[in-house]
Image (cartoon, rainbow, N blue to C red):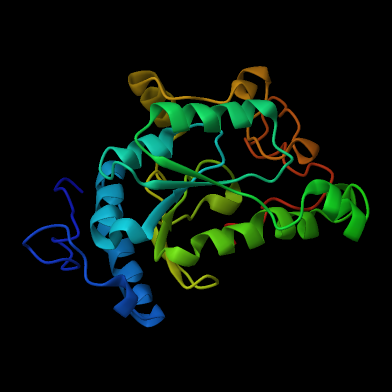
Length: 254
């Protein structure tokens, strides 16, 4: 796609400017149709234009989610939507290096970082479900510390952006740039879905993007410390996540 695609081009906002229709009027069916159309029309568009479409279409009912492995997506969206909310799920089990990226993003970027915590502290979870739930039932741990907090955090939005890329793992190979998240009844935007690692590296170098120091220590993908190990040569980047289980996703992106 060579021409820049905007929300106006898609007929999703009026030609007078980027003010969307009242999001409260949009039914799940309307959001689904909007997402399906945008997914077709924006496939092949530059990442910045995909982000611009989302910002113009949803206004302050659009947010970015970030694991703080790096700040590429947050920076990208902030270029077209300064002040955008960036949702970070503070599980209580993050590496210190991850929290440092979060704090640096809050200091350096024109975004509003929202740290969302689970309803239970790690200690309270241990008391209710037994210690080290992540070792016994990682799906339940992810549900408590990631999935439920995200669903709570998204309650005020109609659309959210994630930094999923097709080259990260076989399970993400068909990631669309825009889709309808039927589970949550919201539009999900993946602006950098088509990027390769080389594209990410080039963007980081060009804009001096904050990056998690753990990548320099052999980690290919970074989550909570109990369920993340260094990756080995030849493994896909997410092979170090839940390595002792038949589990590849935390449940946020299913």
